[in-house]
Amino acid sequence: MTPVDRVIYFFTPYTDSSERAVGRFFKGLNERKWHSRTRSRLLKLLQSNIAVINLWTEYRYKGYRYLRKAERRKLYDNLRLISDDFDRFYIAHARPAESVMLHIQGLAPHVAIGPERVVLLQALCDYFAPGRGVYVYRDSSSFGRLLRDPARDTLVGDCNQIVTLYVYLYSRYFDVRDLQIRRLPEHVALHCGGVDIETTSGTFANYGDRKGSALLPIEEIVSINLLDTTDAYLSRHEITPEDFLYASRLAFVLSHDRDIARHNLTVAYRKLVNALMAQGSYRKALAFARSSSDLKLLGVVGNNGAVHAMERQKFAEARRFAKYAPDRDRLVQNSWRNEGIYLYEAHRYKDAIKAFEQSGSRGLVRKCYEALFFEEQDKLGSTFTAETIKKNSGTIKRMRAYAKKSGNKKLATYASDLQRHV
Image (cartoon, rainbow, N blue to C red; front, side):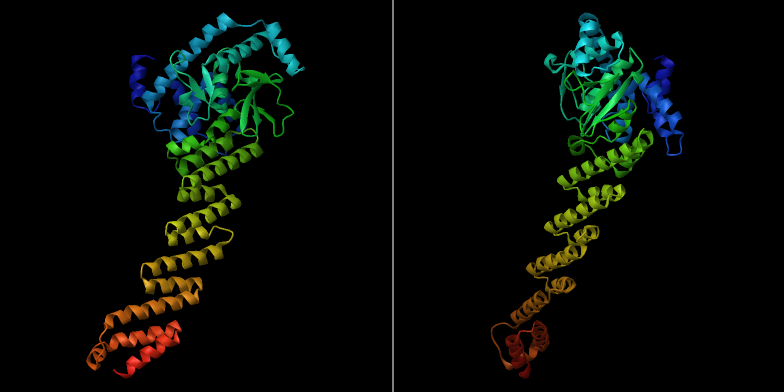
């Protein structure tokens, strides 16, 4: 980068021209864009530097505020260190194409890959093989954990992230259109010319007969990464509904198969909402559930959020959640009843009466009037004279009214006897 470029990019959110190209691409995306042209532009960006796409979208659309310019520059430097280290390994440890092809054909007899590409794919598998200690599979919340100096640190990442790094290193030698994404339930791998590459273990495989398996164009990895939200990610980062929904919309626009995109979006919403509920973040979970248009998911949040709020004596909030629950009427009634009990125990009997009336708990309403009766009785003291009775005529009048409303005949008789002495 020239001195002039450094000055220019100092005043922009981008580290360099590669990030600017990625940023402009995503900023200009919308549902009306011509899909084939969008796909062509995305493939060029993937060929240029898929790692930039991943880091920029994590920063811009997934709430990774630690990925500011200085940190991204550091990670790009680490990526160059990984690339250089792999190049040296590739030169020193490349296996003969014939032996690699013989092994692959045992897994996938109809494989069709050129010898140079076979050797490169084997070298990638060997370089990242768990036994070497360069890379370790782990559910990870950020691509940045994978972009470390291999001479000093272990590279840590999940299946999406290690696939992304494989694609980047492959793109430095050959066209990324050689590759495809092998999607499996809760997992992704690479595919090339008829054979799968299990990037997490550095092995070749054949997943074609696996239930739920599908082959997707290589650019689908961008949509998958956009919708990837692990529990670790949620526990450490604030994701706004706006950011998540925008990322989801971008993923939907970029996806080759709308049915798959819709499925991925549904899965992402459920994972996100369930994780938020596990953390007790029910308000945020409700916001996401409402945006998802998944009525079943919304019902679960409504029910669980109402119960959670009641347990914390947030009864008005419980009723707001309850309106989204399938058993709305029962939950609302329970919230009023529980609120009444809470208020009764706090000796706020008049407020408790209002809550019990809303829940239809007539017996508990009568108990509140009894409590109000005894509260008034305590004002009379223990000594009764004609003078003290007359002085407390208002109190006795209220006692009589409360006794009548309580339905307690003994209390009513007692209050009436006092009333006759007024």
